[in-house]
Length: 98
Image (cartoon, rainbow, N blue to C red; front, side, top):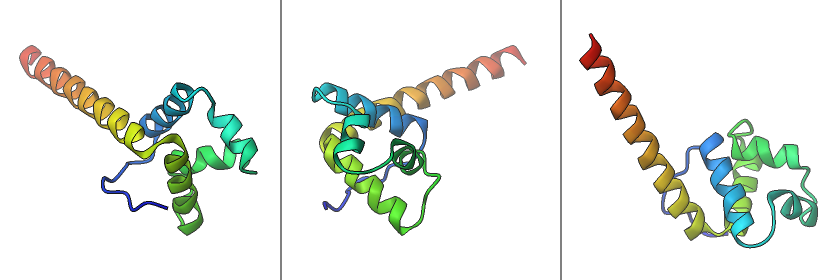
């Protein structure tokens, strides 16, 4: 398994990016789970960070590797930048209205 150069914060954004990466490769998160003998709900607990122990982290690394680490990194970075921008705009709007 590769050493991840960039940390990922498990949660909804990471899960959505992983699902999108599988779709862009012409497959799906569920297909990967079935082919790898992993129950989809177990895989989701890893992507959402609800299973943060050694096994959960190892499963998350496997999922990210299978989805394509470079693709996940690019998608995750883009989403996080967009979320930060939305937060900044909301903060600016709140300050302007007070």
